[in-house]
Image 1 (tube, rainbow, N blue to C red):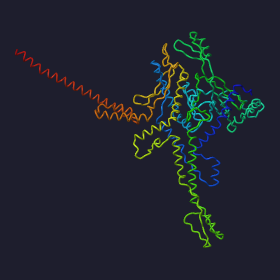
Image 2: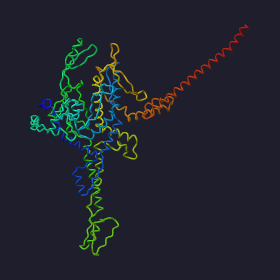
Image 3: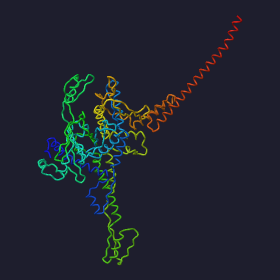
Image 4: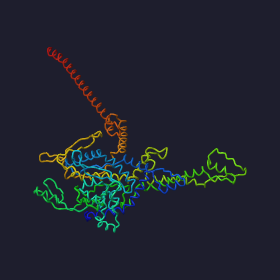
Length: 621
């Protein structure tokens, strides 16, 4: 085997730092998941409870809190919209194409459903949730976007990164861990079979030089990099931002920024390219190693994607200025509340069992039969015990009294849980008072939504970040000439419409729908498209229609009401109303023609009656 390269050693050093710094937060994340899976007790607590026959009750509060937050977010979610500041009609048209293509990708790959799962991970795990973006060949042989949920325990960011840096702009590097079989590794990176054979044969003398150095630095042994049971090898991929020089050129139509190497190649075939200068920029450099094979370096190159974006997007419960290894999650904050409720209920159950199973004391040495019967039947009701000695006394020793205030401690804990999660009764669709008005209920819901906005703000920024990356890489993914792509939009009635459009269409000396040099940005809408906003808007339109209709019903625009209605089947009503209106218009037009014809006939009749009279008058004259 080859000696360890400096590039591989750099990845290994970064991995050791990440492993050490992430170990506590990963341990906390695993504990949080146990609570969500309704397994809050440790093995020690379980064994002691079994030994002393104590109840271990589990009253989960995690799932209801998570369901309420996620459900409310789905009802009030904000979408990321693609816009342009340019007044050029071509750029405006390209904005619609990019938005339509993103809508189609969202449906094709269930991006929104995956985002909701990542949101759940962010609320559960202190390490947060991750989505990975890649570019893969589709069925037509073209490059296209691909989004997947990542294993959040196998992605480690630079520990110095802040949770508030959701764009990872200040993050120096990330490392992704994967486990693959030898067949996959040999096929992808052309690794020789003998490398795996040497490792499995235990050829330690070939690895000694590299591992002695790592043992001195406290690194992990090779055994942690290979799963012998499943024949899987650990793979470490490090992505880091590096400085790179770009050349700005003018090709006669637009200004572009390309790497120096590309400029040298293009200049040979295009001497008319105008050199504008050089600028410093950042790109992603990717280094991949296989630690078990003596830190074998299998890839070390700049990313082909011409942006400075990592291919992972992270989401956390809270965004503060703390380091990512110090992050907390909503579930972690609720763990003490969950313990308080579980242990309180378990102690109440245990106390009730002690009351029903009081200790029985028999005063008398000759009452062996009484002892044996009481041991068999205990204190079950309806039992009659006969003693030999009439003076034998049988007493019961009850448990110590518990303050009734302590029995209500679980209710207090649940109230604290509501405060921590900012989930009052109205956010669960419950009214706190029987006489509470609808307006008061709505206002309290709005205030509660504002209080839990940090969760919603984070996921909104997460959606925005994904779409921004989509816009940044659009020119790279859809670079082919005359390429047809699927897009999705809505008609005037809000019904989904699918279509196809060409990009980079060559028409004589002009390129239609050019994907290069796009001038666009992404912003979050104000939630006007979510179901809650649509319902509120519809109610306001209904109130307005009622006011107008009280003065003149003919002035009420029924189509506007139906198009704003957030109900299924409204499009059928719209078609029906339009057909009725068209039919009425046709009938009105026919009636108008009949009236005009009738008037014309009357005029002709009148004229015919007047003409003979005029002739008679002329004859008399």
